[in-house]
Image (cartoon, each protein chain N blue to C red):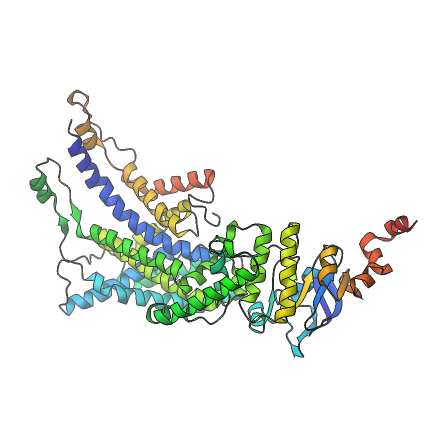
Length: 336
Length: 258
C-alpha cells in the first residue's frame, strides 16, 4: 500500500491534464454562452473560430521566431496572442456585418441563425485549412516542463513522477486571469452591464440608453478574445490541427449546456465537469489501484472504463443526462 | 399632444385596431379602457413603436412619429411600460435605474479602460439620481435588491422609476395596476399624480380598475372592437349607454335595467 504514490500518479495522469483541459473548455464554453445569452443563438462556428484565432497567433509566432524574438522559458505564442485576437476580431466583426446582421434585422428565429452559423463554420473551416494546411502544427517553444518527472522523483524520493508542463501551468494561469477580467468587466463596468441587460431582457434594453449595435460589437470582440485564448492554450497543450478544433465543438457545447447556456459561471463549471469526466473515465486505473490494493489483490487488467477513442462519447453522455434531468443546466441558464 | 389618426392594425384579416382616432392632451392623465380584445394594447404597441400600423398616423406635438422604433421614441421622450413588468432581473434595482440614461461615457470599450475617472464621476451622479427616484417611489430599501426578486407591484414601481431617470415627457402605462395589492396601488397612483403635477408628465394608461381610473384619469377614452367608442370624464363614461352595452352586452344590459 502506497497511497502517496497513488495520489501522485492520479494527479499526474488525471488531475493535472484534466485541469488544463477543463480550463481550455471553460474558455471555449464562455464564448458560446456569451453568444447564446446576448445574440441568442448557438454558434456552431465557435470551434473553427478558435482554430482561426489560434492560426493567427501561430503565424505571428512564426514571424516573431523568424525575427529572433523569444520570451525565454515562456512560449513566444503569448507575445503573438494579441495579433491572433485582433485577426479573429476582424474576422468575427466582418462576418457579423456580412452575414448575421442581415438575419438579425429580420428577427429570424434562433434555429435559422444556428443553421447560418453552420454555414459560417464551413467557411472558417476551409479558410483555416487553406491558409495553414490540414497538418499538425507544433508551435510550443520555451521550456517544456515547469517540473519534470525525474526532478520530482529526486525531490520527493517517491517512485512515481509528477510532471507539470509549462503549457499546462500557462493554461491555468491565463484562464484564471482571463476569467477574472471577464467577470470584473461584466459585473462592474457600464459596458459589461449593458451586455447583461441585453441578455436579461432585450425588449427593455432597447427602451433604455443601450445601443444594441454597440452591445453586439463588444460581444464579438470579447468572444474573439476568449476563442483565440482558448484555441491557443489548447494548441500549446496538445497541438494545432484544424480538424481537432472542429471536434472540440462537442465538448465545448456540452460544457456550456451542462453549466446552463447563458450563464458564465455555468460555462466554467461545465468545462471542468466535462474535462474531469472525460479524463477520469478514459484513464487506466491499473497503476493507481495497484498502489492502493494489498499485494495479494493486485490486478492485471488496465482498469480503464472506456478506451480513449470514446472520449467524445463521454461529453455526449453527460449532455444527454443533464438534458434529461436538469434541462436548464447546473446553473439555470436561459434554456437548453 | 399626441394625436392618433385613423390607425388600423390588421393581423391576417383580423382587425385588432380598426380605425382608432384619439387625442392625448399634453399634461393630462388619459385613461384608456375597454373590454378585453378591444385593441387597447395593440394600439399601445403601435404608438410606442413595437408594432407598425397597417395604416394611419401618430403625431407628437405635430411631428409625425408613425412607425418609429421604440429606441427612437425613447430619444424623443416617449416611454412605455409593459403589462407584465420588464426588468433586468440579474441586476440590482439601483443598477436597473442606472442603465436608463443614454450616451454614458462607460458604454464604449475604450472608455472602460481609459476614462475611468470620468465614468466614476458620472456613475456617482447617476447613483444619486437613482436613489432620489427610489426615495420618491418610497422603495429606497430595495435599492440593492436583485430586480428579479421584486414582487409584481414593486416591479411596476421600478418601471415607473425608469421613466424618471430620463427626460420622459410622455409615458404609456399598460395595466400598471394589474395584480398589484391596494397599498402598493395607492403608492403607484400617488407617484403618477405627483409626476404629472410636479414634473409635467403626460400619461396615457390602460387600466381595468375603475376606482383607480376614476381617481387619476381625465379624460377617459373607451375602446371597443378596435374603435374609439366614447370619450369624456369618468362620470360621462359610466352613464354612457354605448359603453355599458359594450361592457355588458345587450342581453345583460336589458336584464340589468329590467
